[in-house]
Image (cartoon, rainbow, N blue to C red):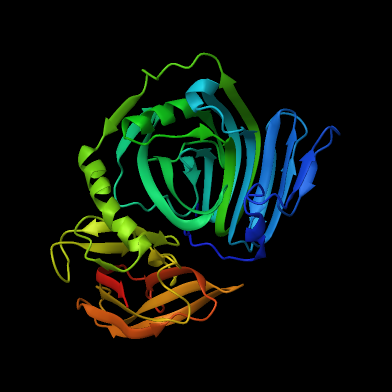
Length: 422
C-alpha cells in the first residue's frame, strides 16, 4: 500500500481496527434499505451481492455506497492512508482457479491530487499475500521495486510485474511479514477528461504472476479499489461489474515475458532480506535491495556506476517530499527499546550544492515518533558517513523503521555500506 508501503504508515489507534477485518472492531452493515449509504469512518458491509469497505488510519473521508450493483463514490483529504473498495470477500477455502474466471468491467471518474491508486486489490491466505493490479495512479507510479520480474500484455495494455515484501506490518492476520504481488500498467489508460473505462481480466494477471514464480493462496478478497496516500482527491465508480465463475482454464490469449535475471536477483537477495529483518545486518547492495524499501514517493534502483565500496549502491530518486527516502524494517525482537546499537550508512548526492543527509528512526510508543540517529552535511559528489556508535532506542519503542533522508532538499541520492550492530 502507498509513504508506503511504507508509504510508511502513520500508526494511530485506528490500527487496532485495520482493514476492519483485522480485529473486527468496525461496524458491519448489510444494506437492504434500497438507499445509498454514506460513511466517514471505518466500515465493512454488503449490499446487492457486493461487499464494501472503508479503511483509513486518519483523516477526512466520505464513502458513498450505492444500493445496487458495485458502484460507489469517495472523497479524501488530510489523510495518511485510506482505501475505499467494493467487491467480494471469500472464506479462504478456494484458490482463484477453483472459484472460476475473474474479471471486472469498470468505469471510473478518477480525480486524485497526489499519491493514489485505482486498482483491483485483495488478499490471499496460505500463503498470506497482498496483491494489486494497478490500472491508474496519481503522482507516483508504484511500487518502487528495483526491477520488474516480467510483463503481461492483456486487455489492451502492458503491465510490469513486481514482488515486494512488507516487514512486520498490519495485515488481515495481524502484524506479519508478507509479500505483495503487483501488476502495474506502463501507461495510464486514456479516456475523456477524468473518465476511464475498461476491463481488468483478474485471473489472467494471476496466471501471468504464476509464470514469474508468484503463487497466490486461497482467496480472501477481490475488490475494485481507490487508495489514497498522504493526498487528496475524489472518484466516482459508475461501473463495477465483477464477474466470477465458470470453468477456469489457464489463459492462452495473453503475452507474458519473464525476466529470469531479475527473478534470480530477487531470489539471491532473499537471504539478505531475511537477515536484515531478522537481526543485525551489513549491507552493500551487491545482491540487490536486500530488504530496503521506498519511503514515500521515492523510487529505489540498484546503481552500478556509483559505489562507496564494491560495484553497486542503492539509488534513491523521485522524491516528492523531504522525508522520502529508503528504509529498512528492524525487528523488535533483536533491537530492544532502551538498549544501545551502532548504526552506520554511507550516502552521496549530486545536487551541485551542500545538503544535509540524515539517518532517522521511526517508531511507535502509542503515537508515531521520529528520532535523529545521525546528521551530516554532504558536499555534492562526495560520499559521507552517517554514523552513531551508541544510539539508544527510546523506551517503549515498537514498529522500528530505520531510514535515510535529506531533510532540506529533494535531491536524488545514493546509499551504500549500511550496518546495524550491537
